[in-house]
Length: 173
Image (cartoon, rainbow, N blue to C red; front, side, top):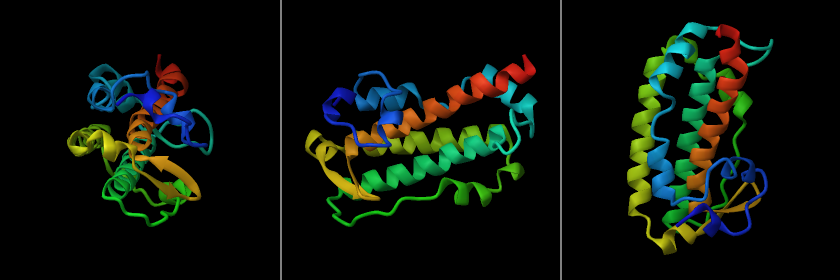
């Protein structure tokens, strides 16, 4: 199923879903199975603890945020895929950010962690047939489908890696 098969996009999540071209969900997950290419990761390593503006996260913090969000969105997709009707709570990214301990991890370690997680999530989505991808549940009073959550995984990653390239890379270029 493609992004256009989602139908009406859920509010808030539409920002991320719209980051992804109208392709099959498995192709989208596979096309973006690496956090960044090797050259971009080298630039990220050069940045260290640099931030483009006071109060912003470091690149390692952003990577950890992408990983945390990937886990949460995949968990939601799994719950809805298994026809769990429990209304799920949202999460506070700033609370998570304050506790993520990413300064103790290297850029390369975070990239490997993301790659492994994305591969596992791609395998999970391969199991989902069309009827499962159409299943919906509620997160924080917003209805969202399993398919939409899959595109959130990809779009969220794309959004934040674009921010890194636009805001952080000019610091070292």
